[in-house]
Length: 186
Image 1 (spheres, rainbow, N blue to C red):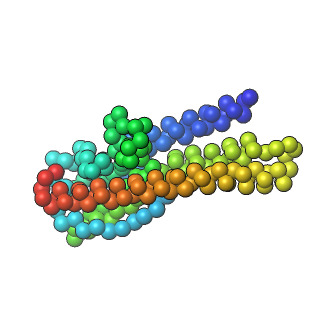
Image 2 (image 1 turned 180 degrees about the horizontal axis):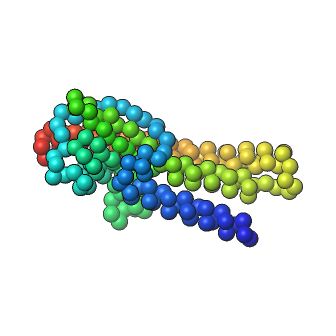
C-alpha cells in the first residue's frame, strides 16, 4: 500500500513541476529540457519596447519577450476548449526560445520539458513494476519490460502525432509573429 502512495506522490510532484515549468516565463524553466529542433529565421524588425514583458498571442501561440532580442513561446490552449476535441486545444508539450541577433536572424530552439520526460519515464517504470508476474526474476522483469514497451510504443505514436501538430502550430505562430513585426501590427 505504501508503494502506491509513494508512486502517487511522485506523479503528483512531477505534474506540479510540469505546470510550473509551462507557466513560469524564466530562462531556467524554458531551457530545462531536451532540444528537439533548432533553426534560424530572419526577422527584419524588432519587438517594440512597449510589448516587452507582455504576452503576445499569435495563431494560438503565446510569446513573451524579456528584451527586444530574447523571448519564449509555447502553445496556448483555447479557453474552455481543452477537452472539446479540437486540434488546437491541447496542453503544451514543447517550449520554445527565440534569440534575435544584431543582423536580424532569430535562432529558434524547441524543447520537450524535462518534467514531461520524467513523467513518461515514471509511467514506464510503473508499468514495468505492475506487469511483473510471479516471482521477481530476470525473466519476469524482461517479460514485463517487453509488455510495458509495447504499451508505451502505442502512447509514443500518439505523442509523436500530437507533437508533430504542435511543431507545425509553433512554426505557424513564429511565421505570424514575423509577419506582424514586419507589418508593425503587434
